[in-house]
Length: 415
Image (cartoon, helix red, strand yellow):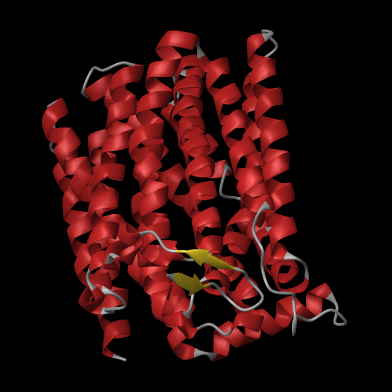
């Protein structure tokens, strides 16, 4: 049996297990390449996040600086992200994604070398984090805009859910591996491993075969293209509402990750191995949540899930604030990951279904501006942890999620 990929793409045999509803998007060759490339990429990203967090807190002992470094990663999504969206609608998306991965490969290797040779200073971490964020601000809108190009519309919700599942599979493995590697090989070794992971991403990206960039604007200026994308979002009410809903988990909930090293060391009393397990636990819940969505057509693209998942996410963060046992903390973090990804995957699906292809790069880059606002949440989380402790910070974040989702989510869902 053969199944056709997108137009201008070759045909490929379908393995029987790919016919299962949960994995049906993987029958498309291009999506398989994109998905396996994501596994390598996100594994390196999670190894980097746990390693940077441990490195910063070990060097400085400052929860505020820890939150600042984690937040700095997201700043480029505000500054260069919109430009990346314009380029995604004008240039070859495969090549753009390929060269960002090459940059990440080289940059991670050089930073590992900086640590291994003993030249590391605190400001080097800030520079590394900022430039890594610039690369990701280009890569992520392009990757998101490619997904509807490699699967038919009827498989889009499943593909987005599997994309989230792939990211979170590595979220389970990556932090735990990163924590163990800190203990076994030191911090520098983690960045060398991350660099090797990006080699895999570049190879997968190079093999993508996409349709020509027909219909994408070439003549207008970058500024005019950007202005057109912003105007489209502002005047398209359902699309604008989905953008606003995307702010809730990203700004108010996700920054809990930035202070996990503080919670692990000061409240639970665990070392880098324990931190790796704590950072992995939300990924386990996220994998379960995305596979459930991918397997259940009735759960795909349901707006009511946004509100339900947001409230449950807030309650889970409050439960984490009250937790003092490692086993219980792991269980609560699994719940947090499940509710968080259910919300984000559903919101992403609804947004992609509303977006025309010729605007997709710009719309997705504007949607990812919410990641550029993460520094505000990370700064708040780090400052609250510094002043009152990480449990209070978790509690305030959970309460904020519930209040804002009630104020913004319900009126939006009624429209």
